[in-house]
Image (cartoon, helix red, strand yellow):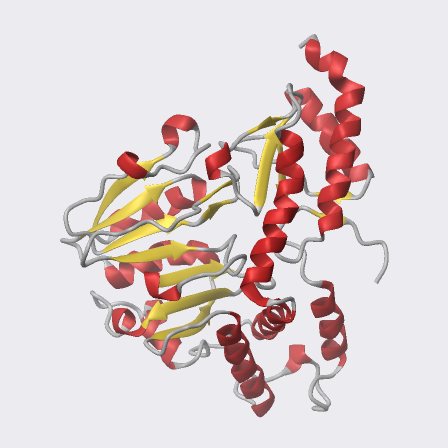
Length: 368
């Protein structure tokens, strides 16, 4: 492998290089089977082994209690937006949602199809630059569950402490963009879901971790494919799963463990993010979006003094091998996404370019 760029994409994101190199070999042939990993039957003994190894590797990353189950589904986090209320929210009950950006709003949009939805906190009045906490949070009476999006890729904000749901309710978390980036206490949650394409593997597979009692029986009659319990019972193989995604996710789990586990991931991610944040806080050319107390370690968002300079910045960055820095269309500017596998050298290269660009365009910014 040569000519690699620094890929700042919010997803699909860069994967660990050792994982890619092992995958190259296994695409040729795996387990002396005479077959590629891409050709294995999802009911065959080779894929039985892959499934077992992926489960084992996931449990090695973080302690998953016996009363929880792990499985995978298709449809990304977007499908979970409706699957969660379909399985848990009866028509006469209420679920509480944190409204912290686009992906949280996608979940909120689906909930009223099944039951009542209460916005317990919103960052809309600050254009989602901060995570609402304290008195800004107002739960409904007796919600079934409280849903939050742990990290907001577009706005560059992240929950640094889990919400505390009312007694009798449970937490549901969309952890797609910061899953396994730091230690996690599974027992705080009723259900966690995460699209794999940021920290866990390729696009097309979603990891789900759920408390067994909560998914034992959906609150309404549902098509079989919509029932969490069916996917859990079949170890993610109720229908043909994205087999390569399962394989690659297992390899990423093992890579995390080999790197020192979630504590090491957290230290690495914080140190890498600090490279950019320290620079942003030391200058007055670039304008960060997220407030300091709500900043994400996964997605760092900022802009230049003008949209024209934003465009020039992205063009110059691309020429230097700093790819996929364009911010989401809803906010503009730039977004540097740096998940677990992103190299620290990439953050250093970006800051070096940012300094150079600011020096070259300071006069244009001053006259704007």
